[in-house]
Image 1 (cartoon, rainbow, N blue to C red):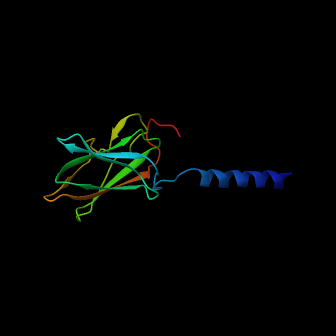
Image 2: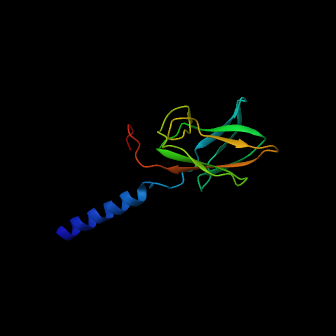
Length: 134
């Protein structure tokens, strides 16, 4: 009887461990967009199996937003022109357009210089965010 209970408990732990995303796990299929300054939405796409979307953009300043995020997430923005990457503060699940912000609460904004370029946005699972339930 005890062996059976232990086997059930072990199986439950394995299912729980593999059934939930862990911190840093790519999030697939979430709509992500770029908003230009001062232009409206310039580009949109969905995250792929690596949690990435790559945008080809013209010169300008761009903010990143998610549409209806379903899990706590972190956004990393990497301009493909060798500029440093930027990582957002944890983003809570929400409805509508939710902007990626820095730890100070300002919109995460990247700049594409003269001639434009490519911007890679990566979305990964964050740890629990205060005020959310899993």
